Image (cartoon, rainbow, N blue to C red; front, side, top):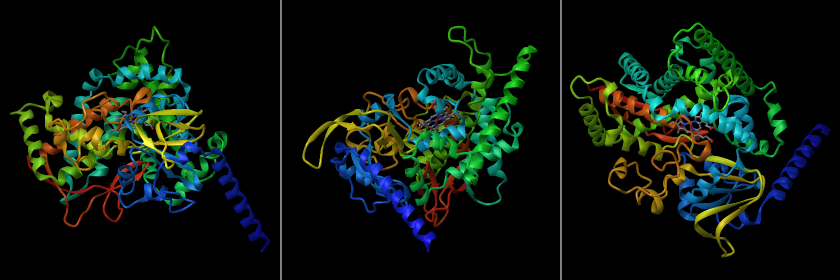
Length: 523
Ligand code: HEM
């Protein structure tokens, strides 16, 4: 009895304390911004946003009803700003006063390591320096040289499809294995089979763990964000299964990273050819102007490149194939374009990938409708003012052309919502998958805010995705191979859905993950 009373009192005290912290931090400006009613104090609108049957069921309607800047309720009565206004999102990614929420920052440090480029974002100059070193390996000319690797890996997907005994194939594992193979060959200079099997398994386990979303996880994240950073950084040492997986990943990635780096430096010392892989390029590059990239800095990128570089591209491709399967006519036209580009007997090395209008319109439309990261939260490190491209009217009837944000408040960059803006960006049918919009002049041609096609799928500003050219080129090569050789259609009674669990995931109508397609040889 005493035990129960104590537990209930402790829980009540904790809830009151958390609600006091949240209220103390809340800001009048945000509270007067219009937004949907909240169905629950504990979860606010978060379950609608993150656990709806299909991602965007609520969010895309809210955007239409309340505009490109509106307020939703987070867990425990917290106010959150949802932003898809083009000026505002651009400001959020360029302004150094906005950083990851504490729980995400702690997670990124734990999975990728404190010295990985993504965890060094607060380091300002250090982050800039690391990017300057890594950038040349991701520049257009460098990425072009990876073509034979992408083509070889794509052929292996074909072989695996040919080996399948059933007509219906879940394309997700095939694409996931293939993108990890590309990363392994391009970044580390060896086939994925030569990497430590434990590390490969651990990488897939991390992807698997991060592709689950639940109400308790959402609440846990919200509470974590209220805790001081040092507690979160130490929490990873708790004896909990998820944390053990995270610790193992970082340990294995560091061990493998050092093995690869030592092998490459040893080979270079002996005057042996080390190849054109990214790690060799980074280790051998001449840094006479800005100091040398240390070996430990190269090693520190191993976990990040393995996890972030493969799952994003694989999921994007899976969504693209699901759309193709639902549009037989476009699929035929795309295949005809690929066959024409291949010509008679021309090998894939000579395909003019950038001059294929349907292929590139299709990739842009896939990235627009299915940004791997549909929403990205930022925490204000100090009081800030976010400018807007269009003014908004508050619940009190006041017109705002900028929004005041207080230190500690969370703003969500609504990437997927931005990519469905009608009037100012993508046209009246922005909710529809229609690659032709990129060819018929529908899309906005003005000032670009992301690195590619005015999209925000790779974010923008000084922390734009480093691998965006890599991802585009890989998708071009994989699609030419797959659509050139196979036709894709949806199995009977299969209704694809889109879920979110950190990244967007394809599922069936029962929530089972995967992209099940009927795949038939056509060439
Ligand atoms: C379709 C595929 C991809 C998408 C949609 C994508 C998207 C993104 C996004 C949105 C970010 C910013 C994350 C944030 O700030 O929260 C990011 C960062 C990053 N991405 Fe990608 N990515 C893709 C593929 C790749 C590939 C293939 C690589 C490497 C080979 C890569 C390497 C990186 C790195 C290193 C960063 C961190 C950059 C920094 O912190 O300065 N990405 N990516």
